[in-house]
Length: 130
Image (cartoon, rainbow, N blue to C red; front, side, top):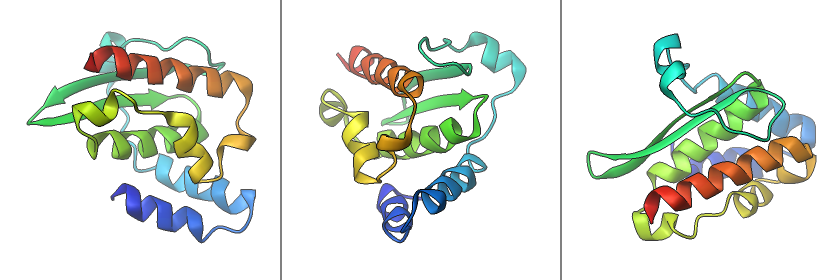
């Protein structure tokens, strides 16, 4: 799935309930890392649910491994994985999660703690690229 396809899915939603359902459906596409891998991934601070995230460069492409105990966050993490995989290093230096979520009309419904954890991921992305 591409980010353009995700945009199309969310553009068709007319309510928060429909957007929430799309996030849950996308969450099902996010593979859960096995327990051994989760133990090796950095735990992200700032969220009530445990959240793991790691970005890396492999096969001439930026990729990430991400997972959360919260389904809605897994949907957002799937969106982030997709967006990150379509960016080059220069684009990721200025990558911003909040405008991405605003574009999909889901940012305004996220709790402060979820937004904080996503801002921490944004910092990790920028620090990993520089």
